[in-house]
Amino acid sequence: MGKWMKNIRQVEPYVPGEQPLEKDIIKLNTNENPYPPSPEVLNAAAEISRTGADALRKYPDPCITKLVQTLSAYHGVWPENVFAGVGSDDVLSVAFQTFFNSDESLLFPDVTYSFYPVWADLYGISYKTVRLDDDFKINVSDYFIPNGGIIIANPNAPTGISLPLKDIEELVRNNQDSVVIIDEAYVDFGGESAINLTKDYENLLVVRTFSKSRSLAGLRVGYAIGSEALIKAMNDVKFSINSYTLNAPAIQMGIASVKDDAYFKEGISKIKETRQKTVEGLEFAGFAVLESDANFVFAKHGRHKAKDIFEELKKRKIYVRYFPKNRIDNYLRITIGTDEEMTRFLKEIRDITEQLSMRF
Ligand code: PMP
Image (tube, rainbow, N blue to C red):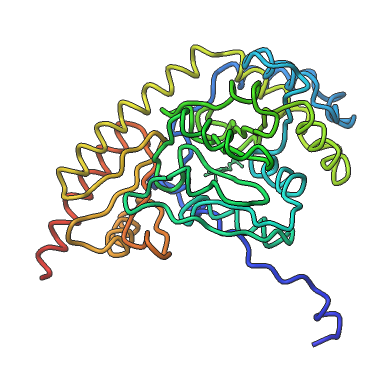
């Protein structure tokens, strides 16, 4: 092997959920929305293909001005308070590079989005994980210790459990010397947003995505809301890596999504109704289900191993997510699909648990 090998950065990468190429599967493994995006998004795409040759020939607006303005009007903040990126993974990655540059450790829960330790390792940020309690809940006073920053997903992933706004405010109030990031990827499905708190706390950044509640995981649009100082610092880092992040069609289609608020709200209520039915069905089949404010549930069977159920489901072309990790290796994370998909899923689950019981 060449000597150059020793100079190569070795990283342990994030492992995304499977995107199987086979057809006719029920895909409940990556928290996508089962419903299509707003028809307005598709109209914007049609408009781009009719008139968009010029938009494709040129570089896109590096300041993403129109989408930033649309989001600022939607959330009642100034455009200077909004940063947009290629999905919230891109926004979070820029935020890690921008804000976590301290001798003290970054703090996040021991059970949370598994990308956080990957960015921390890649960017040389030291971190400490803080144990969730035995019910997988966050106790904010555990974070009242010296730190170089805090990141919390609210609702948390993969548990789906959310933290009340008053707890988030307490967390931020007691940590005014660090940047606190609240990752609200799933907040539209039931949590309380901390966006309004960004007006009172200059060190608070709230990160959002179009991937889940807006059914646009394939478009790759995410954003952050925070004080002008935080957003300027992120833009300075972004312009030091890649000025042209969002492409021109994504900007147009993203704007169209935000403008169709009625469709957005209707989609969310459908998912919440199906989530309720799914929880009831899972409990009937012998699962304990954590209380979820997200578009997925995290559940553990009373008698059977999560891995066995996961593998059996896969044989029946139903994909859910299984994490072979400390504390959560007996849970399954199940994305909420359409009513029909969840009815079929619950039927297979009842069948699988009965069959597994017969093996003993
Ligand atoms: N945060 C959390 C907690 C997530 O689960 C995800 C989805 N994998 C993301 C951020 C990133 O989503 P996206 O890049 O699609 O916006």
